[in-house]
Length: 496
Ligand SMILES: Cc1cc2nc3c(=O)[nH]c(=O)nc-3n(C[C@H](O)[C@H](O)[C@H](O)COP(=O)(O)OP(=O)(O)OC[C@H]3O[C@@H](n4cnc5c(N)ncnc54)[C@H](O)[C@@H]3O)c2cc1C
Image (cartoon, rainbow, N blue to C red; front, side, top):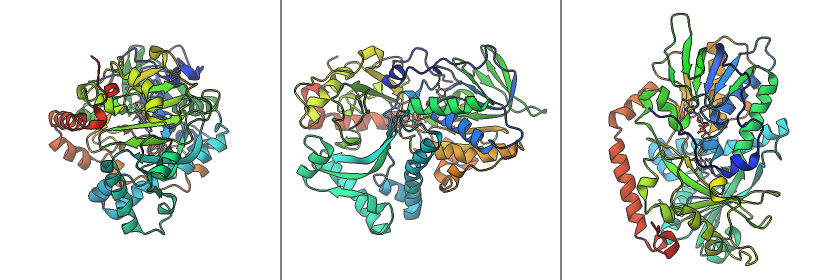
């Protein structure tokens, strides 16, 4: 049983946003009943509420929703992530092909890429593009070693071989094979080569707060911050599911679990399938417009950094990864739920990045955190680990009236919006609400098989789930990286 820890470290996104919805409660008292209870107010919960609103906008009777959030609104992974709206455009092609075949792999890529146009359309329709700092451009994977280049290039070549250069996505992916070109494009010192493709960046916390504001204005959402759902019942003979909180009970016709890492608190059958993995980031002061592209540096399969720069007036670089440093302390990452603690010494490592990794970082701009270290300068978050690397979306097996969209792990931005859109019409149909698909969903691919929370998938995973073995394998992988030269310079070695 696991609930979000109280007093998590403070993230730049949350502190700098200064949102009026941060601690919002629509009513002083918890409502007693509703049609749809959504547990969790991150990107999955907010998208679910948004799609319910869009599907029933013109209906005579709209479902009454209540959203319960254990922390402040959007106070967990979505408020603490890297802000990268960066599909796996090619870089997972080989492992996905091995599991799902060449067609299955390309479909997964299409689903992720579709999120770029979905975000663009949604933000334009709602007039929130600037508010949520949504930007599109080219991103890069910079290979910092031959090992990384072999892996990245191998995925690219295999995709080209299977799908040809005529594939619409393939045309968008470019190889920069010479080191000078890679360094110039990526601004990363020492990049040997790079692969680029379209991607976006966003302020995820502001996005969630913006779409929640839109749904609140529509009038059928009751939002309740600081209200953890402590326990939940099965659906009773009268069709009600009861959620118990410290502020009283709420009964709902249907419950949608959008609780990410913490899904297993209310659904213990997921306790071996969705696990606590902690990651860390920092916000670094940078000259306006200095970093041109979002991107990632890769050394080996465990060691990477990723970053973006926010537009003016914020200008901060959001830097994540820090794996040259954290591979020395695997237990600080997985399994680990200590979101109320910093990774000791990581702030110094992040602060050394501009001068050690970025070409031509101006000497006039000594690397400094954008806020005090414990006030949003550096933070931790539950990146979450899912046993087969795909989230669970759809009706919860063997629990009538319960639905879920949880376990999106460290790669949710190009997955969640359209996953949530998949659940909503089915939930509305089950509750017999009149609905009309919004124009926004018309052109997007359906949810793919690896995402579905089928009883067969859950049973199969439970038969082999071994958390101890996973932790051991994770530790061994970190140890293998920790002795490589790129993890052994002075700044990468923990001082404690
Ligand atoms: C450090 C870090 C960096 C990341 N970087 C990126 C990135 O750059 N790009 C990318 O695509 N993805 C990234 N991710 C992953 C991405 O942030 C997640 O996949 C996504 O935010 C998950 O959204 P969610 O709504 O499912 O989860 P969350 O945002 O975690 O929302 C779940 C909510 O449920 C609440 N909750 C849980 N249990 C209960 C309960 N019992 N009662 C009430 N409320 C409850 C939680 O408090 C939380 O607010 C990163 C994640 C982390 C942590």
